[in-house]
Length: 567
View 1 (cartoon, rainbow, N blue to C red):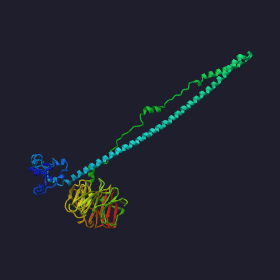
View 2 (view 1 turned 30 degrees about the horizontal axis):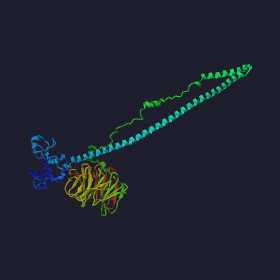
View 3 (view 1 turned 180 degrees about the vertical axis):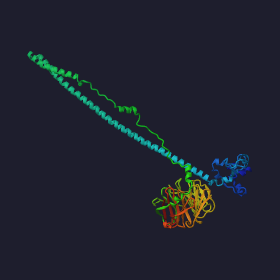
View 4 (view 1 turned 90 degrees about the horizontal axis):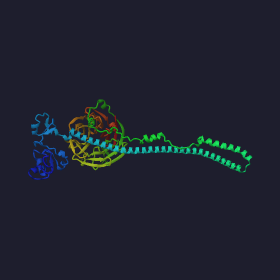
């Protein structure tokens, strides 16, 4: 950058400090208001494009550092060397690139850079990277949520297992305690029976001892002698009973003990925990969009004749809207809801109907509306203002159901479509243009004046445009170069709405011819799909849903729209 963006470069050379009002990228310097006027009138600089200094200062620093002049020779770049992929001044050519055979004029290389395929691809790639990052962030956030939910579930399972183990152990404990008490009762009962028997024998012996004492004192010798035999027999009997006990199990020591089950021992020693927490990494299941996939999706290939000839439509539903309305735009959302841009009496309205035809919601607009398209990235609708004096694009928030933003324009805007990186629209006086709905930057695609009420559609690197005045459908690339033009008044008169299917086939409404025709991707073949016999009185708006493979067509007046499946 040759001069500071804050002061005028021309005034600096005169040792005068004045703030810059504009920036000229070709002169690579800022200009104050006085110098700007001279700059715009001078023959050498009148064709230069200037921008307000406030807009220039919005550029990233690394972009601002890019100069129009060679750092080494301080001369302006005029040549581009394809071999070394660098701009060159005249001195560079002589000193360093005199043997390079791939040298072209720099102006030819940078011409239409903003609308080039490469720039478009970079925008698409950035949008793709952003989309992929959002997908990954959402997936990782969901993974955190899943981990928390799974942890709670496993915790409940562990508690349930522990409770089951506790219940089982409690049951085993109750059984073994019951068995312990039963064993004690059994053995105690046996011992008590022995004690009772011994007490009886003891009492009998005490009686014998008392008898012997009495005999000793009071009985005669005869009585003593005769009773001794009987007493002796009883003593022998008692002695034999006592001796019999010493050899039996009745006098063995009864001891209770507990032997733990080996399975329980193993449970304690061999099973240190209730289980293991397993962390597994499953395969990456996010479908990221890749550049190759996107390029494959954008490739325009010729549709085989059999595929083109076999395309048919079948009526699925007739949608009745208010009769006193004027429908100029329609769109079929991925969830099956239907959008209509229409004027009811004097009020312009965007109407959203559910798949069954019932009203979802309506948004009244402060000025007229023409066409409508859906911006998938942020779930919004873009509505063109047509020939309204307001000259703008309305952005409608589908969630809040109200106008989110108004983008002012200098031109009348008719047909509009979303191509993934921006809105493409047909202007009345400034041609076909692309606008970024976020920063509102505009790129020209096809310059010049267009007729009223032209519609646009896009597919990959191509744009389709209807012209009702000359009854044509024109296919352009993103640089505005015509690829082909279809014109056949016998089948298509006053074309209006236009849409494209997944294979690049073009569906066009003929207002005056009261029909819908199908045009092949190369513009060489055509077929009539629908006519006045199918209820098309003055068809105007059309849209093909690539997600649902369905076609919606709306009459301008009468409040009728038709939904078809495409086979």
